[in-house]
Length: 273
Length: 283
Image 1 (cartoon, helix red, strand yellow):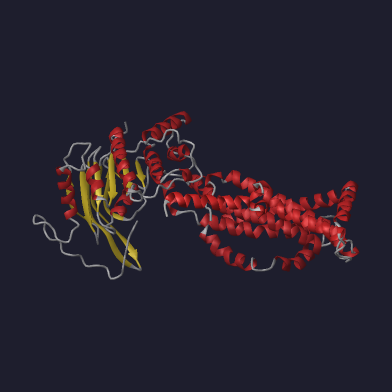
Image 2: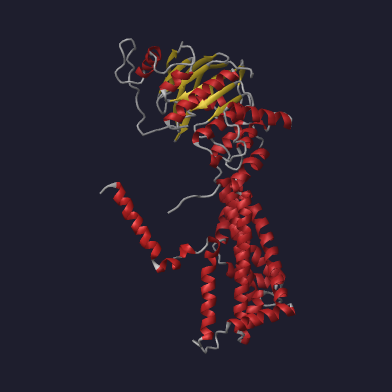
């Protein structure tokens, strides 16, 4: 089993320069994630949730504050952090097993160890028998399974998921959510899921972080103290889901303070990275 | 109308189609591998019929049998093969030189913004010059021999390779580059394992075009820089002496060689790029 990492985000702020003007995308984010915890980040488009993930994986730089993995400041990308993007991003010129194997290129393993690890992870995501298929032969759901195997093959300490099921149909999505839960439990890994699907977040997570946009901030963190596997139809599940959803509605429930609408940026800015 | 009557009606329509005497003439009844031969076969029949039924007395055309006799004679004396070998050797050397330089230049332009800024404008100006406008310059610098012809061919192959390899490298999706960064790829790993394979279809298009252009240019070079052996010289001889059989034989040989080069290239492409799958779109 992989070693699960502790992720500590302290006073993280990030801004982009747009036409010479500073545009804040994240402001003062602090979040502490325990080893083996599953945390979801939900928020509307433009709240900076994907940017937050890209900072943690190391694809974005120039931020203020700290991102610590097991107490060490993260620098650039590293094999101890794995990511699944919204698009599967498989290399079309490689087969399934080669696509999973590219993650191990710099892992310093022997060929035999690499093959074993690739095989194990293909089995983990339930794609045994498709090792030599090319991506054009796979469905969207299968491609995303390969992407999950590729992200896990290095046995990272943290698995980041950036709306991984956003482009899938509802049935496939529900099925892959169950699969992701099984994989997360099997690997005992720390996981951070960015999504705009509240039900998905409540179904999978120990905690749901609700973000609000312009600039991106944490609005509220909702605990999900339900035993797994969770029943989406249960009363307790619906209650937590409604609680999270109420953060997005215009007419908040009585027990939640009214949030002043933020000053909007004149132009139609839309950040989708 | 009930479903069963519709079915019956449809069945009778199919029945009447099946009984039509014209159904044997429908092109769809020709087996797929033979369909491409229909037009050449019709042309040959037309050509044969022209003389069989005496439709023309023109000196500007010859019967199919005369061309066949010339082909047999020239191949038994070896003249045809020598010409063909000379043309193909030239084609190959020019194609390889032009493509290799093209790959280097295209790769450099694609990978370096600095080089693109430095070389790009000059390159884009040069590529606007018609290939044949280089002939006077080339003949002055390299003479009329093989060196000049190969230089011309290399030039013909060079431009499509540069353009397409540059384009291929520049259009590698940023998403793939990010995957490589996530897995901590070195620059060499990024180039050999992501950029090159992602750009390969486009690079291949360039090489493929270069192959076609080089063969076209082979004929152009032999025709315009008339010295030595070659299929182009065979054509020139035929025209000057009014030997229509030579001219037509030359045209046929050029066409067959072009077809074969095309076929080889598409086989290589299908093998190298088999990961792209086959389009199944039907219209």
